[in-house]
Amino acid sequence: MPAEKPRLIAQVKGCMRARHLSPRTVQAYVGWILRYIRYHGTRHPADLGEREIVAYLTYLADERGVSRSTQMQALSALSLLYRDVLAEPVGDLRHVLRSTSPTRLPAVLSRGEVQAVLGQLHGTMRLIAVLLYGAGLRLLECLTLRVKDLDFARGEICIRRGKGGKDRVTMLPAIARPALERQLERVRTLHGRDLADGAGRVALPTALDRKAPAWAADLAWQWVFPAARRYRDAEGGKERRHHLHETAVQRAMQGAVRAAGIAKRATCHTLRHSFATHLLEDGYDIRTLQELLGHTDVSTTMIYTHVLNRGGLGVRSPADRLGGG
Image (cartoon, rainbow, N blue to C red; front, side, top):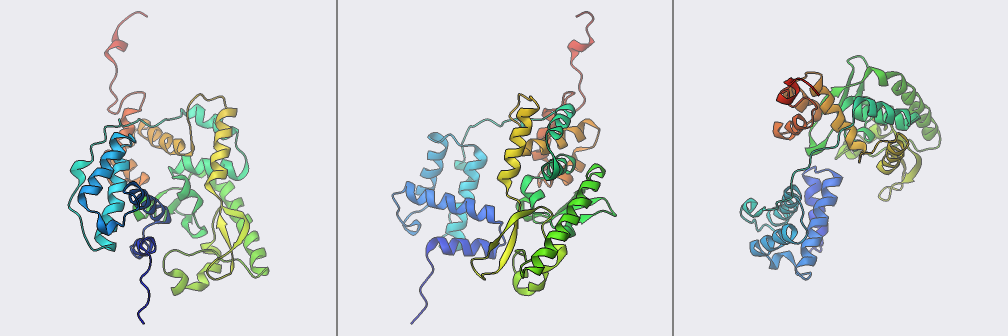
């Protein structure tokens, strides 16, 4: 008797994992596919097509008021569903992405405001914030750093499988070195205790759990910012330790911004925006910044030229050349 065919969402997840898409992307795409199915009365996508996809994308723009990038993500999820899972590819529907939500400039903290926020943070949370600002990291990129990703000799941090699955290298701020060295000593001690308890393993990316299972217990693969508690792996039943959760850092950041008396909607990602803006203010070129941030398209990086006090090209207002007050 032939094996039963996996359910649709299980097929979608399997397809995306085979393509080495990140867990966040898998979660987002599955969400869009489920919402698309519910929008069309829970009809099976195999019974739907281009007309229904266009109707859903139009609904997102007209009634939900989503941005063009959000529409594009929904379209990408549905394209993957039809092309790679149902084997019924749809045409190029990018022409229907007509959301008119305006592009928002990122919030940026001044250097003094960054210093004020850091002054309200302590210990591990302060170190994480220093890395977000000093190396331009996304929050999850910082929290998923492994011991082997830090190169003190070269003063570099290697970001593995960042946004878009790309690797990149950025600087390791000198100011963070002492705290990072202390953090790694804590990781070494914690890992030793875990091993003594019969645990001490972490999840490995993609197929490494199968190809090199011993690496899961190697210090080099441990998280730089491990969680306080261990968990039991649902599949293998082994005790593992996850990295620190994002919400803990986000709450600490919100509290620090309030305590510093800053009247801006500043988040962890604001530190990355501030990193980019301050480098441009210091005279670094846009291409260097693009590499450090890991942007595929330089047009994404160019947004920071619009938030500089002196303008992206160092343009001075003609009003500042007038005499008087």
